[in-house]
Length: 68
Image (cartoon, rainbow, N blue to C red):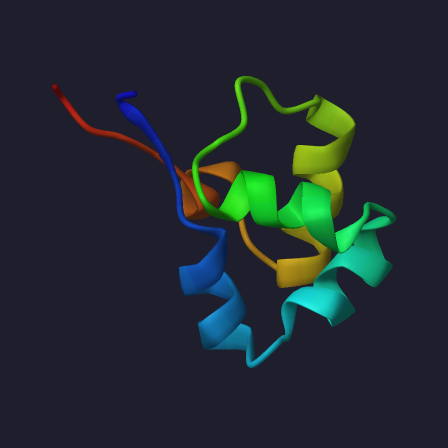
């Protein structure tokens, strides 16, 4: 999949654990893991917005496009 999710990079920059981030944005740690590991087929804009607020970043800091 050419869309890459870099949540783990932003979490490391912010020194935030997966459990803390999941709690802040209101999703389960299992669903956050699916996002982090590029297993998700889609992401809701509300979830993306919550991630950006919690990690103090922009969508482009989390999502990247890589050619196949």
